[in-house]
Length: 638
Image (cartoon, rainbow, N blue to C red):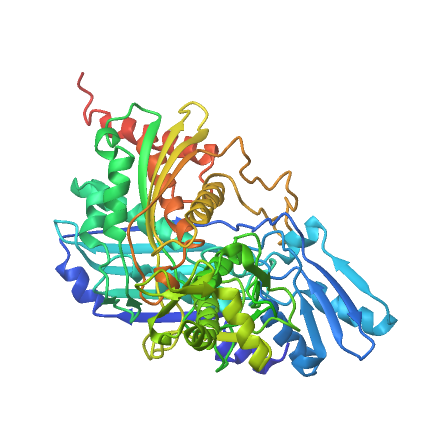
């Protein structure tokens, strides 16, 4: 390592990313506060643990095209990176995404398995498969950063927030991965949930001798949200304010620009708080449960797709083609959105069918081959429902606009008076005047050849501010949610049993309610595991001690609590048919709700994740010693 490198300010010490954001006047905000409290919290290294490992199969086709099958959640980004690394046009590389067994952010990159399989296929002239073992997966990692978080919050007597100061150190491992963005996300998203007039964030992402951390469900935000929600509840209890009430007082309003220039459109956070209070019977239970039983509240939400692309580019973020078969019966939807088990192909097919006006069973999805599926940026930042949905629904409407004139001619009425729905094209008011949708499509094909519609989506221009890092956290829409958790804690052993979760979410107008509830339930289980058991353990040399699914604990069916998932009425104007995200946002309330419930059950706060029995017993022992010390008489009198 050269002396010049060691002296270079850009690489001073082991700091990979430095964020210095100050909005409003933090000192003025704290002077205006009637009460302040400051606490430090510690997150944990959490691994995505998908069932399917990274795997790639490469072959060189007869015309020299690179053919790669990859377990990826970002097929276009992989395609783009392969073209850069191998210095070849995109058109000489074909990427096929087969069914993917989970990603959660860990497959949001071009992995070594992709490059190695291609290099070996070039060398041997034969197909080559490269697959990670479970240990390889842990050592490749790209899971959640361990974060050291200090928050200081100032409030008025009634609980209104006047200022928030945040200092976060992110343990990033040996390489950047998506860590630069994680460092910005850890600070930028805090202001979307509550009205914070003055805010300062100091963020540091550090290089360490560990595997690289990257993007994981909620990307940089769950641990800061755990810390903030915990501290907000502590302050509420200090001031004698109901913890749900303090959230209602500060809850974000729709059509608001945050202090750090993020544009909130639809927002029903207050409605989720009202609903979860009633459904969980909060008023009857909070502060009235017997020792060892507790109830807690947490809130959260996330972006509905990043406002700016994963790399610098001008093209639309989502693009779709819908091709109608020659007889007009079926619609083939082509889009490179990545189905990784989250159900995106189902909701995209539903929205395509709605845009076309035909039954869902006549839709066929083609989303896995770069040769036939146009660019979509992939499954990250909860973007597919809003962005991919806008693209496919617009492509459907494009098809309808092309066939309406043929139906109008056949029915001898104006095209403006026609509507396509349920497989027919009919007069808007006179239901007796109609014809089969397929017949109109067939007529178009007979005269013009293939019937194809196209659609695309890009976020609105001008999102965010102009300061360094302003694009991170921008989005066309934000989700909001509130969760109440109920736990029992064995005060002798410290063992936690998560008994029940009640969640209400604002995801706009749900396209597929069953899929929404599935996402919420999965988020609760994943977030609960992160809160009470999951932790990647390292020795003093940075080696992983538990790189397997026997010693790295994840929640199983026997650990899962009773879950109620509810939705509040909402409509997002930027989303297709009023929809926005649910997949990552539903994770954010979970950690804080569990931490609060455990504190409510035990009388002690554990501020380091995961909240294990050992940490609970240690906190109880410290409280007992403190109570004994303060209760002793100061003199020797009886």
